[in-house]
Image (cartoon, rainbow, N blue to C red):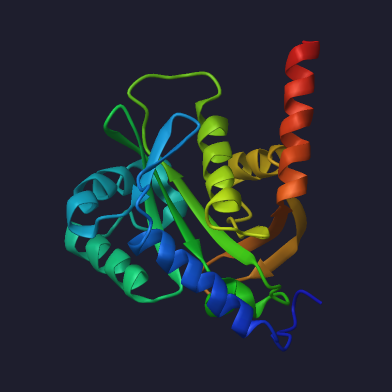
Length: 217
């Protein structure tokens, strides 16, 4: 039942996954990585926070819940995240400009883990796409695909977990287009969330379906 907190027997595996996250952040000589034309690198709190603050105070960022935060408060949020040992933030850039932010986290140590039985290899994801300099058709989908590819191929996620606000209809449509299966709504302390999951096989099938539709059209 989604409303029950189930005993989690995967802490050792989650610790291994966290080690992989740390390895990617601190040991990989190949960072930043080029994925689908974007460069992905670890968040640099002091360097990136002013840009994040400009993004977050915009009206379009309502579901991110940081519109009222000062720059130093945003910095504190991300420093805490980086220091946690079970979550990290990443920046995606293109042509040297920041394009998007995403957070990857172990559901075992997050509120979402109170609402479903966490499996070994589960990895949570939050994504914020910065304002584009000019409108590009399919850009949001391309960013979303890039983040999921990175998480499966480089962070070795077995299943990606998301928990968007139930009112965020745009992200629900995108999640489903990328292969996510919705498991129901759950009550978080700050929102009502829709819990959804996606394996790499489901993601690849969704991409294949999209490609087939594009060719057919």
